[in-house]
Image 1 (cartoon, rainbow, N blue to C red):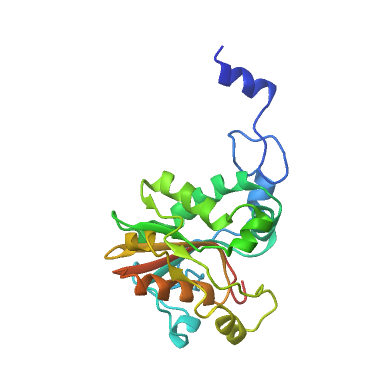
Image 2: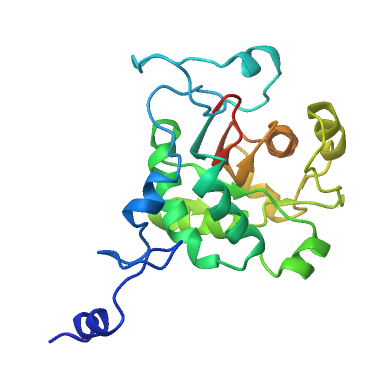
Length: 240
């Protein structure tokens, strides 16, 4: 009997959320899967929010992206930010559940496939150093590194820096979010050069108004990015 098989008999794989026995490691059980709102079908090509109707293969745009200037090119998200997905994001972000980055990155990779390019550079949304000191890790960087391994794409975890310490955006209006995050990011003085001439995939755990992605996109443009696309683990969506 192989060691891995023996360990599986002694310590069978458990659901990453509730601990129920599952068939494979780093999976959701049936109950948690049904409580996790995955985004599928027709989505906005710019931000990834789900849209009514069938996917005909043509790019569609949501009302928000028609009325709000989006500096990036295309975007996707894997989950809707509610129910099981919200619990998962909060556990990853505040509960030291770094193991959740593995299944999360797998779902993000599947959602991102329509917007990927072979030479894409994956860049996580950076955290301010004081926040890193308190939290000990940047969940966006964890997701980006997992994605890079899954998709065989280069990851530049410190291509962008966050010299401006911004307020936590929970509860802010859309306009307040954009004001709060304005000019919060900049290319790293040295490693920001990796962005020049590249197609960039910006990665974060949650997209709400898009203010954070917009500010980070502007920093990538300033560093010479040829294209910028965005990818979130979860997306806050109206009426979803």
